[in-house]
Image (cartoon, rainbow, N blue to C red; front, side):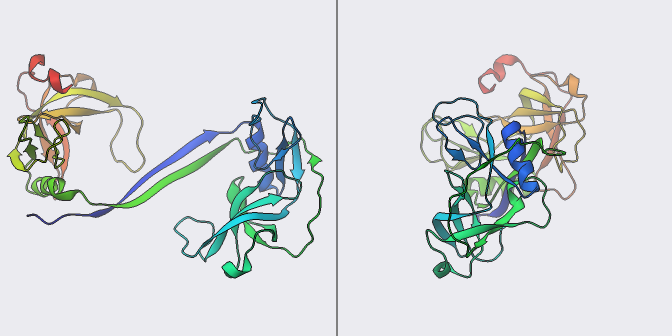
Length: 315
Protein backbone atom coordinates (compact mmCIF):
# COMPACT_ATOMS: atom_id res chain seq x y z
CA UNK A 1 0.00 0.00 0.00
CA UNK A 2 1.47 3.40 -0.95
CA UNK A 3 2.32 5.96 1.68
CA UNK A 4 -0.44 8.47 2.32
CA UNK A 5 0.58 11.97 1.30
CA UNK A 6 -0.28 15.25 3.01
CA UNK A 7 0.62 18.86 2.39
CA UNK A 8 -0.20 22.29 3.84
CA UNK A 9 -2.50 24.26 1.55
CA UNK A 10 -3.77 27.83 1.54
CA UNK A 11 -6.93 29.07 -0.12
CA UNK A 12 -6.89 32.86 -0.27
CA UNK A 13 -9.17 35.34 -2.01
CA UNK A 14 -8.96 39.14 -1.67
CA UNK A 15 -12.59 40.28 -1.76
CA UNK A 16 -12.95 43.87 -3.01
CA UNK A 17 -16.18 45.73 -2.33
CA UNK A 18 -17.43 49.27 -2.71
CA UNK A 19 -19.02 51.09 0.22
CA UNK A 20 -22.34 52.84 0.47
CA UNK A 21 -22.66 56.21 2.22
CA UNK A 22 -23.24 54.73 5.70
CA UNK A 23 -20.36 52.23 5.65
CA UNK A 24 -18.10 54.81 4.01
CA UNK A 25 -18.82 57.30 6.80
CA UNK A 26 -18.29 54.64 9.50
CA UNK A 27 -14.88 53.49 8.23
CA UNK A 28 -13.69 56.98 7.39
CA UNK A 29 -14.76 58.04 10.88
CA UNK A 30 -12.59 55.32 12.42
CA UNK A 31 -9.65 56.71 10.51
CA UNK A 32 -10.40 60.07 12.17
CA UNK A 33 -10.90 58.49 15.63
CA UNK A 34 -14.64 59.03 15.44
CA UNK A 35 -17.19 56.25 16.01
CA UNK A 36 -20.44 56.67 14.10
CA UNK A 37 -23.69 54.80 14.43
CA UNK A 38 -27.00 55.11 12.64
CA UNK A 39 -30.41 55.75 14.22
CA UNK A 40 -33.24 53.41 13.25
CA UNK A 41 -36.93 54.23 12.87
CA UNK A 42 -37.58 53.36 16.53
CA UNK A 43 -34.63 55.46 17.77
CA UNK A 44 -32.17 52.63 18.40
CA UNK A 45 -28.57 53.52 17.57
CA UNK A 46 -26.80 50.71 15.71
CA UNK A 47 -23.02 50.40 15.99
CA UNK A 48 -21.65 49.24 13.62
CA UNK A 49 -24.19 51.00 11.41
CA UNK A 50 -26.15 49.30 8.66
CA UNK A 51 -27.78 50.83 5.63
CA UNK A 52 -31.27 49.39 6.12
CA UNK A 53 -33.44 49.10 9.21
CA UNK A 54 -33.36 45.43 10.34
CA UNK A 55 -37.01 45.68 11.44
CA UNK A 56 -38.70 47.86 8.82
CA UNK A 57 -36.15 47.46 5.97
CA UNK A 58 -36.30 51.24 5.45
CA UNK A 59 -33.14 52.94 4.23
CA UNK A 60 -31.13 54.53 7.05
CA UNK A 61 -28.96 57.62 7.00
CA UNK A 62 -29.39 59.44 10.31
CA UNK A 63 -25.77 59.24 11.49
CA UNK A 64 -24.75 59.99 15.07
CA UNK A 65 -21.48 59.98 16.96
CA UNK A 66 -21.10 57.75 20.01
CA UNK A 67 -18.43 57.63 22.71
CA UNK A 68 -15.19 55.63 22.46
CA UNK A 69 -15.98 54.12 25.87
CA UNK A 70 -18.42 51.36 26.64
CA UNK A 71 -19.43 48.26 28.59
CA UNK A 72 -18.64 44.60 27.94
CA UNK A 73 -21.88 42.67 27.46
CA UNK A 74 -20.29 39.24 26.98
CA UNK A 75 -16.85 37.77 26.29
CA UNK A 76 -14.74 34.68 25.55
CA UNK A 77 -11.07 34.15 26.29
CA UNK A 78 -8.67 33.28 23.45
CA UNK A 79 -5.51 31.71 24.91
CA UNK A 80 -3.83 30.98 21.55
CA UNK A 81 -4.10 33.79 18.99
CA UNK A 82 -3.81 32.78 15.35
CA UNK A 83 -2.08 34.42 12.43
CA UNK A 84 -3.80 37.64 11.39
CA UNK A 85 -5.77 38.16 14.61
CA UNK A 86 -5.65 41.64 16.18
CA UNK A 87 -3.24 40.74 19.01
CA UNK A 88 -0.39 38.23 19.14
CA UNK A 89 -0.77 37.69 22.90
CA UNK A 90 -3.77 36.00 24.62
CA UNK A 91 -6.83 38.24 24.61
CA UNK A 92 -10.60 38.24 25.07
CA UNK A 93 -13.17 38.44 22.31
CA UNK A 94 -15.74 40.93 23.59
CA UNK A 95 -19.04 42.44 22.64
CA UNK A 96 -18.95 46.08 23.70
CA UNK A 97 -21.94 48.41 23.84
CA UNK A 98 -20.41 51.83 23.36
CA UNK A 99 -21.89 54.64 25.38
CA UNK A 100 -24.74 56.03 23.32
CA UNK A 101 -25.22 52.86 21.26
CA UNK A 102 -28.08 50.40 21.50
CA UNK A 103 -26.17 47.43 20.09
CA UNK A 104 -22.79 45.84 20.77
CA UNK A 105 -19.64 45.88 18.65
CA UNK A 106 -17.46 42.75 18.35
CA UNK A 107 -13.75 43.33 18.88
CA UNK A 108 -10.90 42.25 21.18
CA UNK A 109 -9.90 43.28 24.68
CA UNK A 110 -6.28 43.46 25.76
CA UNK A 111 -6.26 42.00 29.27
CA UNK A 112 -3.61 40.16 31.34
CA UNK A 113 -5.79 37.08 31.75
CA UNK A 114 -9.35 35.76 31.93
CA UNK A 115 -9.60 36.67 35.61
CA UNK A 116 -9.31 40.34 34.59
CA UNK A 117 -12.35 40.17 32.30
CA UNK A 118 -15.98 40.26 33.34
CA UNK A 119 -19.35 41.12 31.92
CA UNK A 120 -20.21 44.69 32.80
CA UNK A 121 -16.61 45.94 32.94
CA UNK A 122 -15.86 49.34 31.49
CA UNK A 123 -13.55 49.59 28.48
CA UNK A 124 -12.36 52.14 25.96
CA UNK A 125 -10.95 52.09 22.45
CA UNK A 126 -7.20 51.94 21.92
CA UNK A 127 -6.67 53.46 18.50
CA UNK A 128 -4.13 52.07 16.06
CA UNK A 129 -1.11 54.28 15.40
CA UNK A 130 -1.61 54.06 11.64
CA UNK A 131 -5.23 54.27 10.55
CA UNK A 132 -6.44 53.66 7.01
CA UNK A 133 -10.22 53.48 7.26
CA UNK A 134 -10.84 49.92 8.44
CA UNK A 135 -12.18 48.16 11.54
CA UNK A 136 -8.54 47.51 12.46
CA UNK A 137 -8.20 51.24 13.11
CA UNK A 138 -9.52 50.13 16.49
CA UNK A 139 -6.40 48.29 17.63
CA UNK A 140 -8.33 46.79 20.55
CA UNK A 141 -10.26 47.72 23.67
CA UNK A 142 -8.56 48.19 27.03
CA UNK A 143 -9.89 48.38 30.60
CA UNK A 144 -11.21 51.80 31.58
CA UNK A 145 -11.77 53.07 35.11
CA UNK A 146 -14.31 55.73 34.13
CA UNK A 147 -17.88 55.52 35.34
CA UNK A 148 -20.74 54.27 33.24
CA UNK A 149 -23.03 57.04 32.20
CA UNK A 150 -25.68 57.83 29.68
CA UNK A 151 -24.20 59.43 26.59
CA UNK A 152 -26.54 61.17 24.22
CA UNK A 153 -25.40 60.50 20.63
CA UNK A 154 -24.51 63.66 18.78
CA UNK A 155 -25.80 64.19 15.23
CA UNK A 156 -23.09 63.88 12.58
CA UNK A 157 -23.11 64.68 8.88
CA UNK A 158 -20.86 61.75 8.03
CA UNK A 159 -18.76 64.04 5.88
CA UNK A 160 -14.97 63.76 5.99
CA UNK A 161 -12.14 64.81 3.72
CA UNK A 162 -11.01 62.03 1.40
CA UNK A 163 -13.70 59.49 2.34
CA UNK A 164 -13.02 55.76 2.12
CA UNK A 165 -15.08 54.40 -0.78
CA UNK A 166 -13.93 50.78 -0.95
CA UNK A 167 -12.17 48.08 1.00
CA UNK A 168 -10.30 44.86 0.31
CA UNK A 169 -11.24 42.08 2.73
CA UNK A 170 -8.85 39.12 2.45
CA UNK A 171 -10.42 35.71 3.00
CA UNK A 172 -7.93 32.97 3.81
CA UNK A 173 -8.11 29.35 4.86
CA UNK A 174 -5.00 27.45 5.99
CA UNK A 175 -5.35 23.70 6.23
CA UNK A 176 -3.51 20.40 5.75
CA UNK A 177 -4.83 18.32 2.88
CA UNK A 178 -4.54 14.54 2.97
CA UNK A 179 -5.49 13.13 -0.43
CA UNK A 180 -6.01 9.56 0.78
CA UNK A 181 -5.01 6.26 -0.77
CA UNK A 182 -6.51 6.70 -4.25
CA UNK A 183 -5.37 10.26 -4.89
CA UNK A 184 -1.96 9.57 -3.34
CA UNK A 185 -1.45 6.81 -5.92
CA UNK A 186 -2.55 9.21 -8.66
CA UNK A 187 -0.07 11.89 -7.52
CA UNK A 188 2.79 9.37 -7.26
CA UNK A 189 2.02 8.18 -10.80
CA UNK A 190 2.22 11.78 -12.03
CA UNK A 191 5.78 11.91 -10.68
CA UNK A 192 6.54 9.07 -13.10
CA UNK A 193 4.69 10.92 -15.88
CA UNK A 194 1.89 8.39 -15.88
CA UNK A 195 -1.84 8.90 -15.35
CA UNK A 196 -3.87 6.34 -13.48
CA UNK A 197 -7.51 6.07 -12.54
CA UNK A 198 -9.63 3.51 -10.75
CA UNK A 199 -12.40 1.35 -12.20
CA UNK A 200 -15.73 0.87 -10.47
CA UNK A 201 -16.38 -2.85 -9.97
CA UNK A 202 -20.08 -2.28 -10.56
CA UNK A 203 -20.58 0.15 -13.46
CA UNK A 204 -17.02 -0.36 -14.83
CA UNK A 205 -16.45 3.39 -15.28
CA UNK A 206 -12.88 4.64 -14.88
CA UNK A 207 -12.49 7.78 -12.80
CA UNK A 208 -9.50 10.13 -13.17
CA UNK A 209 -8.42 11.50 -10.77
CA UNK A 210 -9.55 8.51 -8.67
CA UNK A 211 -11.69 9.17 -5.63
CA UNK A 212 -11.52 5.84 -3.82
CA UNK A 213 -15.22 5.25 -4.45
CA UNK A 214 -17.57 5.44 -7.42
CA UNK A 215 -19.70 8.62 -7.21
CA UNK A 216 -22.47 6.88 -9.15
CA UNK A 217 -22.66 3.48 -7.47
CA UNK A 218 -21.22 4.41 -4.07
CA UNK A 219 -18.96 1.37 -3.92
CA UNK A 220 -15.24 1.34 -3.18
CA UNK A 221 -12.80 1.28 -6.10
CA UNK A 222 -9.42 -0.42 -6.03
CA UNK A 223 -8.57 -1.61 -9.55
CA UNK A 224 -6.00 0.76 -11.02
CA UNK A 225 -6.20 1.58 -14.72
CA UNK A 226 -3.59 3.52 -16.67
CA UNK A 227 -5.20 6.06 -19.02
CA UNK A 228 -4.16 8.62 -21.62
CA UNK A 229 -1.84 10.32 -21.79
CA UNK A 230 -3.69 11.76 -24.81
CA UNK A 231 -7.22 13.02 -24.59
CA UNK A 232 -10.01 15.13 -26.08
CA UNK A 233 -11.18 18.63 -25.20
CA UNK A 234 -14.84 18.29 -24.23
CA UNK A 235 -15.50 21.92 -23.34
CA UNK A 236 -13.46 24.98 -22.43
CA UNK A 237 -13.40 28.62 -21.40
CA UNK A 238 -11.18 31.57 -22.33
CA UNK A 239 -9.62 33.28 -19.30
CA UNK A 240 -9.14 37.04 -19.72
CA UNK A 241 -8.29 38.09 -16.15
CA UNK A 242 -4.75 37.50 -14.93
CA UNK A 243 -4.60 35.70 -11.61
CA UNK A 244 -2.33 36.96 -8.86
CA UNK A 245 1.02 35.12 -8.68
CA UNK A 246 0.23 33.12 -11.82
CA UNK A 247 2.85 33.66 -14.51
CA UNK A 248 0.58 33.00 -17.50
CA UNK A 249 -0.28 35.69 -20.01
CA UNK A 250 -3.93 36.25 -20.80
CA UNK A 251 -5.96 35.31 -22.67
CA UNK A 252 -5.48 31.58 -22.24
CA UNK A 253 -7.74 28.53 -22.38
CA UNK A 254 -8.75 26.27 -19.52
CA UNK A 255 -10.49 23.09 -20.59
CA UNK A 256 -12.14 19.85 -19.56
CA UNK A 257 -10.11 17.01 -21.07
CA UNK A 258 -11.33 13.43 -21.35
CA UNK A 259 -8.22 11.27 -21.29
CA UNK A 260 -8.34 8.17 -23.47
CA UNK A 261 -9.77 5.35 -21.39
CA UNK A 262 -11.31 7.63 -18.72
CA UNK A 263 -14.99 8.20 -18.01
CA UNK A 264 -14.53 11.55 -16.29
CA UNK A 265 -13.01 14.73 -17.74
CA UNK A 266 -10.28 16.49 -15.77
CA UNK A 267 -9.15 20.13 -15.88
CA UNK A 268 -6.13 21.42 -17.75
CA UNK A 269 -4.70 24.45 -19.51
CA UNK A 270 -4.36 24.36 -23.30
CA UNK A 271 -1.15 25.73 -24.85
CA UNK A 272 0.75 25.52 -28.10
CA UNK A 273 -2.19 26.90 -30.07
CA UNK A 274 -3.81 30.36 -30.34
CA UNK A 275 -6.61 30.66 -27.81
CA UNK A 276 -9.20 31.35 -30.53
CA UNK A 277 -8.38 28.09 -32.30
CA UNK A 278 -9.16 25.83 -29.35
CA UNK A 279 -12.34 23.85 -29.99
CA UNK A 280 -14.42 20.97 -28.68
CA UNK A 281 -13.09 17.67 -29.94
CA UNK A 282 -9.49 18.91 -30.18
CA UNK A 283 -7.05 16.07 -29.53
CA UNK A 284 -4.36 17.01 -27.00
CA UNK A 285 -1.41 15.53 -25.11
CA UNK A 286 0.31 16.55 -21.84
CA UNK A 287 3.41 18.73 -21.66
CA UNK A 288 5.65 18.30 -18.60
CA UNK A 289 8.01 20.99 -17.36
CA UNK A 290 11.53 19.94 -16.40
CA UNK A 291 11.55 18.72 -12.82
CA UNK A 292 7.80 19.24 -12.40
CA UNK A 293 5.61 16.71 -10.60
CA UNK A 294 2.50 17.53 -12.60
CA UNK A 295 1.39 18.39 -16.12
CA UNK A 296 2.11 22.01 -17.07
CA UNK A 297 -0.39 22.17 -19.93
CA UNK A 298 -1.84 20.23 -22.85
CA UNK A 299 -1.03 20.85 -26.52
CA UNK A 300 -2.59 19.66 -29.80
CA UNK A 301 -1.44 16.24 -31.04
CA UNK A 302 -2.08 17.00 -34.70
CA UNK A 303 -4.65 14.21 -34.95
CA UNK A 304 -8.06 14.80 -36.53
CA UNK A 305 -10.67 16.13 -34.12
CA UNK A 306 -12.65 13.51 -32.21
CA UNK A 307 -16.21 12.87 -33.31
CA UNK A 308 -18.75 14.45 -30.96
CA UNK A 309 -20.47 11.13 -30.29
CA UNK A 310 -17.24 9.80 -28.72
CA UNK A 311 -17.20 12.37 -25.91
CA UNK A 312 -20.73 13.80 -25.69
CA UNK A 313 -21.41 11.98 -22.41
CA UNK A 314 -18.44 13.78 -20.83
CA UNK A 315 -19.36 17.35 -21.76
